[in-house]
Image 1 (tube, helix red, strand yellow):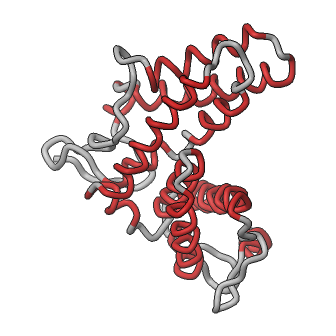
Image 2 (cartoon, helix red, strand yellow):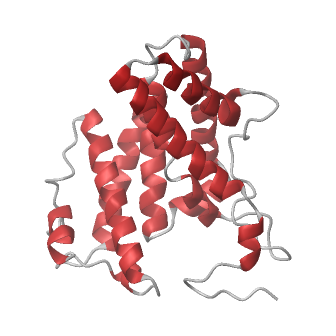
Length: 235
């Protein structure tokens, strides 16, 4: 039987390369796009484009725009809502694509195709039972669900979804934080330092994304007086 041990990974995880490969896609796309942006050397754009197209666009190699099998437990389920945390940093690929837009290696057609992928993934996140399950999570999983929904909605021009999720995030702040800025749901974990930082990182990302909707979350305060600054002060 599989037994949950917080803070420990099933050794079988390391035999499956999906997560590590996706991390490399995010790292390489971002670094190469930044190299192109600052140097205008087309060789960097060429390789960044190749990385993004391989993972998202080419029919032979692309990932399907869902996580139906994310963090499945053999013998129990094929996939779970909490598996959605695995794609929490895909916004870095979006940033990379935006930086590549004036290069010869990343066409308008490529950009629109990537938008279509993220729009399809956003629909899955918001409409599927697995996505709805993650949306209801009260800790860092809920926070990084908001990160993803807002980022993908902004990129695909579905602003109404982004605005709705920003309001949901305000409710997350109310439920996740204590008045002194501590994060009880992260502190109860065995790796509380990691999770407190990971959740606060999500707060900052959401706050920066919300600026695109002219919403100032860095100065926002809940009805009970909770805010992001208190989180930083407490940490």
